[in-house]
Amino acid sequence: MKLALLLLLVACSSKTENAEKIVIGPPDEAVRPAEGVTPPIGELRPLPPRPPAPPEPPAPDAAPAQTDDPYKVGPTKLPGPPRPDAEVKLGTVNVIGALPKEIVWRILRRYIPQYHYCYEQWLHEDPNAKGELVVFFVIAPTGAVSSADARKPLHDTFDNCVIERVKQLEFPRPEHDPVEITMPLELSVKTD
Image (tube, rainbow, N blue to C red; front, side, top):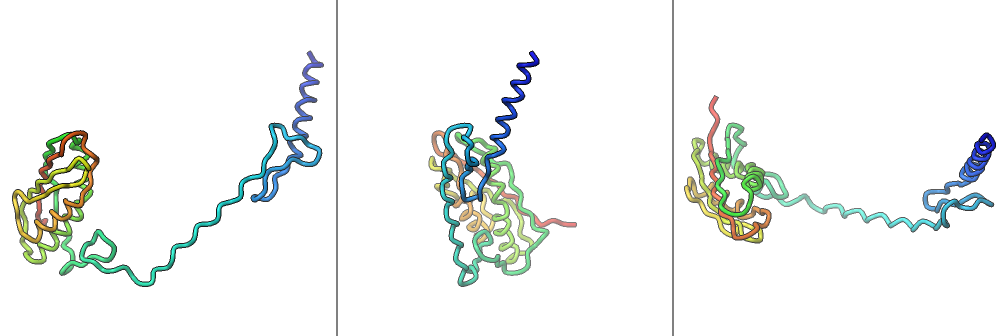
């Protein structure tokens, strides 16, 4: 028994000696065994060359174009200072079709800042503007909005601004037929 343990220790120590003789070269070279040492498993092959670094993007020649839309490139341009007291809330959304209401609601909720921008434009025309806009739209089998209109309009500028943004929405593809959505937006000015 003692002889078997002694032989096992000698065998392990000789493998450890060989393992210690393997050296690692610079990062661009393969791992090569030291002279006179046989690699433990198969042959070592050279590493493939490193891919070239991607070129740096060119520096912009000019500043991005300014736009009236705050959700595109460029600064926002409202007719005056923003109104921190303006509030846009998403009402109870009605979904008819094979698209989960939670998904529709989550996507619509993401776009509230855009509807808020539309409301801010209207508030600069009429500081007391408030009410509820009900937008009806249809999601085509592709997931794009195929049509949208105001079922309970408030103000032409605001209504058109919101409808243009609704038409840009993209949803997951419905499983079957188009999906009909009724989306109420409640607009108010907070009072202290």
